[in-house]
Length: 233
Image 1 (cartoon, one colour):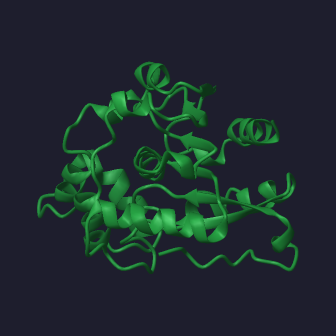
Image 2 (tube, helix red, strand yellow):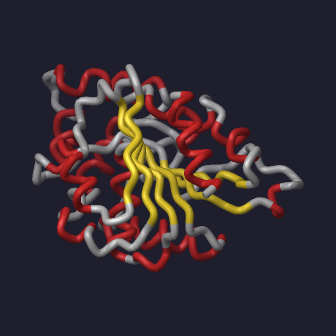
């Protein structure tokens, strides 16, 4: 289920691995590759290990359950000795679900583009899947549809992921996570604020990205600087 990592080089064996999970409707390259995260992580001795959301890029649509997807993500982490993970939006939510399932697998989490509004809909991403496939174009998902097609994704496969992914874990479950966590949230991101999320996570730090909306967060220079500082601790 991992994306092909075209950035692998002979020095990677000496670098600590960090899992990177992209956002809904996107791909690893669009979310993390284009902004330069591979090169950035190399400067502090890390190598990026991509994990693609099922149904995105060349990955097949999910055929099992959310638990199956989390099991595969955790298997990749265990096989590669990964305990540090970075996720954007739906990727960040997937990491939180995995951390609740297997808290001992994580030592540090970076969650980008995540906020309290993501806990407002009990259906999670399922309703997005329905809207993407609606015969009548839904203006509320017009941007997601545009970004998904631009990234080369199949709307049907992306929608299948949305309908398979579980809702975010209950905030009460997050209180159990003994994991150092960095939350990066754009000042103009409509999924914010992150007050309830911050109150739920016992070891969380919030960095608000000035004049940044949801989709610009992964490419924000302020986000990159914050991650470097966090991982250098």
